[in-house]
Image 1 (cartoon, one colour):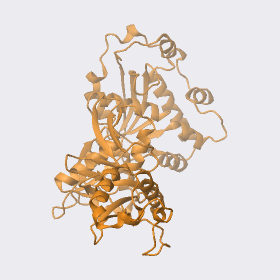
Image 2 (tube, one colour):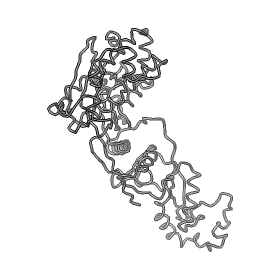
Image 3 (cartoon, helix red, strand yellow):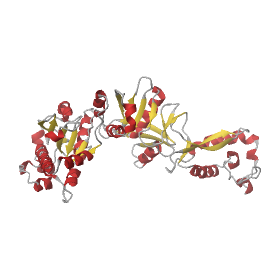
Image 4 (cartoon, helix red, strand yellow):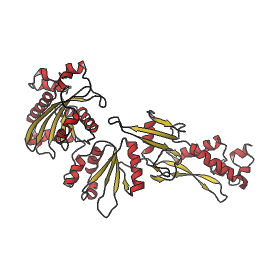
Length: 458
């Protein structure tokens, strides 16, 4: 198996963790074991770790690790520097890899260390190789292959690592190398970075975390820097660089900078900040989101402000927009209701039905609700004042009555936080500038579903 794994572009680390429980944010690691395949050699590494929180009786009975066993052991911070080179730039292999990978990412984050890596989950790998079996948990695999382990040490990290390695070895013997490797390669998430990248850049990209933020790079000295918003930096970059169309742009790139964010919403704010203050150009990380529309007011030849529905484009704004809509028809309906609610003249606003003749009275005048004086020049100043006063109250999609919010974004792992001000689907950059990005309406709507740490201003 070591010879087969040696053909991969990265060394392999078969990993298992024991923890105080299954909660990614609240529980901590108590034991780590690694079987490392590097340059044709195999090495074992294991640590008992003081989780700095009590181990329950249930976990002690399950894993055999007690509070007494770990009280004098190092905390994760003490071993992080030794552990990181054994995992970063490796393919992490684990049974239910999401569990081990997420705990490792969070543990390194507590130490202010970025960590991410490609992973392979041996649960779906077992399903691919042995579809005739229903169960694919580690106990079932141990029984199925008659793997000899000390029953008293089951659920200790190194014991489970060795059991998993034995399964991989047995399955490699039973299946051809081509079948075994085909399934292995297809299950690696998110995949390997391409070998054509500059070696220095490869190291930088494998050092990225899997959190939201900004990728900053300069394809060549003649171009200004580019900026890319990422929701999971390492995963998104691996996926991006597997496309052939990226080769030309990234072939000469030697380095990247990564600006971490607390959340994707914070990453959008950072992108606006860098576009405003540092002159970067922006590239979309995803397919172009849906178009959004807003209302602007422009004076006619009499100086009366009239409503116009326009496409709201990504970019820096001097003020938040008036309303936010997914379609022009929704904007038209909202404008009519808004004018009715605040007693504004639809004729002056130029939102009367198109079938209405130019000199015909507007519906309000025809119904006897208006004498038509609002069309006269003397009423222009009052009309314009009311339009600008009530324009910020145009609806924002289907979010209800709230237009202006102050959101506190909190990193659940580190506790770091940032306050972001949002209005009409835009976010404030400073006293004079706002920023709109097509992802913002979706992000803000998702955030409103969990209204904790939100100050509803109006």
